[in-house]
Amino acid sequence: MEAKTDVDLDQIQIEYLGRNGYLTQEIKNISRLHKDDRKGAGIIINEAKKIVLDMIVARKNQLKDSSKEWFDKTIPGIKPSVGHLHLVTQAIAEIADVFEKIGFVRVRYPEVEWDYFAFGALNFPEVHPARDDWETFFVDVNPDKKYGPMVLTPHTSSGQVREMKRVGKPPIRMVNIAKCYRRQSDISHTQMFHQFEGLVIDENISVVNLKGTLDYFARNFFGDTRKTRLRPYNFRFTEPSFEVDITCDICNGVGCRLCKAGWLELGGAGMVHPNVLKAGGIDNKKYSGFAFGWGVERAIMMKSGINIPDLRLLYSPDLRFLIQF
Ligand code: PHE
Image 1 (tube, rainbow, N blue to C red):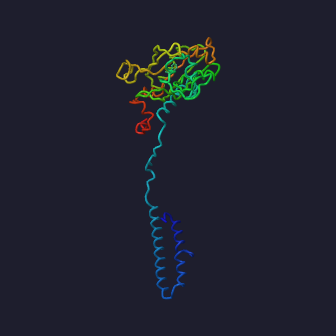
Image 2 (image 1 turned 135 degrees about the vertical axis):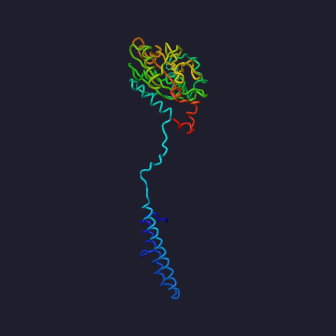
Image 3 (image 1 turned 45 degrees about the vertical axis):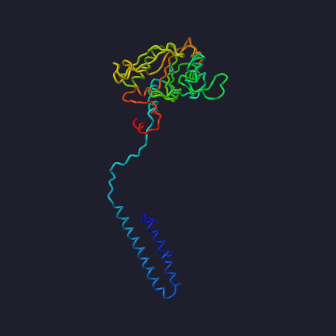
């Protein structure tokens, strides 16, 4: 036994030298020896007792000395590495925070979804290319009679009609942040990615409200000097539809190698199509709304100071990369 404390040493002393200790026992056994041997055995055993006792005392002194060793309690400790939240998780929390401040409610809807909520209810025609298995992941189960095939949701817009059905009567102000899946993989795309979707429905909602919300988000997430612009586009579930651009933070809107003449493309937006309101059971004469849906990873890349050369690195387990953020 390695004696580390006084208590250990007392234990050893009892074991060897105590009343029933090993060496004490040996002394008692001397009487059983031949009388010529008794004297020699006594000397050896007493010698052994002395050695053991000396060793115990020496070790006790040693312990006493080392406890007196000078120790500077003010030296800062060594910080254990505790890790941190993933960059995408941080961004999601930040995005939710920005929208919650203006009354949006954060919701989440299924990532494994029916074709109906992902496409059908959103005014996609039966033959739209997004419904092809070259673009969307289909789950290998029997289609539902009412909702059609099962898919991995390709966008957070699949939460729009679900939210209308959940709330029933406007106003609706939702922000749906979730995973989405598409058949794509290159330096700016991953098969699994995240989107955040805003949906606002109320009386008298117009493009002005959309633009105001986008500018508010751009200022609060990207920084005070960033501006947005709307470009006409086409989505099946919004009319009119827009692509939203934001001023490039490298050149501040002048034009550089990274951007298209000063602007970076952020994502889609538009006024909710009357057919979509109808699918959600909302009176499309009385109410109108806007929606927008952008990629979280893309938004991170456009945020000042973060330059990610390949989006796929975000989902690699390489800590040398992840540890930086
Ligand atoms: N769902 C669209 C996409 O993934 C984006 C979008 C959302 C467009 C809401 C308009 C309104 O590209």
